[in-house]
Image 1 (tube, rainbow, N blue to C red):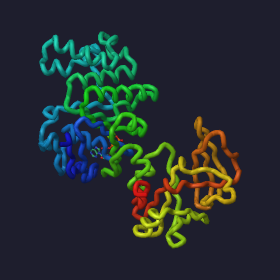
Image 2: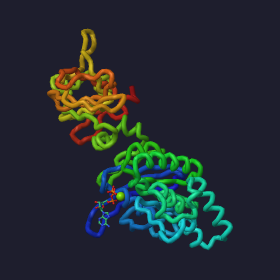
Image 3: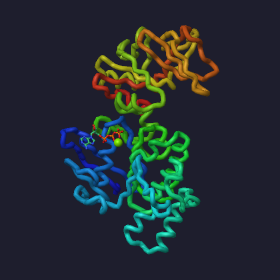
Length: 370
Ligand SMILES: Nc1ncnc2c1ncn2[C@@H]1O[C@H](COP(=O)(O)OP(=O)(O)OP(=O)(O)O)[C@@H](O)[C@H]1O
Ligand SMILES: [Mg+2]
């Protein structure tokens, strides 16, 4: 049985803003689910409805098989951690963490033991007697997490808990969050803007846009099998190339500019049954190679002139102007052409996506079915 179910949940604010629309989502017991999406897509509204901090306009919210739409927040047994955590400045770290247990009138010895345990987990034992203002941002964030963890809630709800931290601290703390999750096993829903962070901490990622859940899966699912154009463009470290295309050669090829890209039998069948022009070819820079296109090879390349070269350590992003538009390629840093050079761009068509006029990926799961 899933721990939490959103069944056709909607949130419409008093001013008419439709923040969440028909959300269907089941979160498994002990799962770590990330919610990813652009600003304003409804992430916080979703989490706040789950926490009971925001009313639900319609639909059923189910926890452990019981409808909880009208259950007050304190009876839901969920701990929420926000980006802008508030610690009590006049209290020491120990007392800040102990707060939820004191409020529940737990015995002193138990409080001491549980705070100590949490502090050890978060590696903040040495700060227990200090006040928050003497701590760094990362240390304060650990204290805020400690206050959430010490309650041993059924669930953790985290809204960009590492949002304002420096990059190196985020990386360190996200690894700790994952370890903590493996130890405590509490179901966690975690909002972030950061794809790498989502991948590092979570079991599954839910991508939202405009109040709607677009796709649910691992980062690899989202990268390799995006359901639509939005997910394809939103996910990925370097933006995916999107080029106007049309079916040609009796559906055996995809024509991009003057170049003919050969399609597999399965791809061709999918496009012939579902595709109506105009089509858009989506190909990730990781799947674009540069080559001389020597005789004998199947030439599926598009020629272009190198405009921009962006070194990224071991690899380099090359951006070239082609008759079909700008195309970026991720190439090993050892074989980088020079600016202005004319190159041939080859697409690994087995990794291609093709979007129809309604922006749906017509080739989704093409690689699985071949
Ligand atoms: N109290 C409110 N009254 C009216 N509209 C609201 C309210 N809270 C949020 N909204 C609107 O609802 C939509 C979703 O907001 P929400 O805060 O859920 O987005 P978000 O995905 O968390 O964005 P961000 O990444 O910027 O935090 C936005 O259009 C926002 O302006
Ligand atoms: Mg938000």
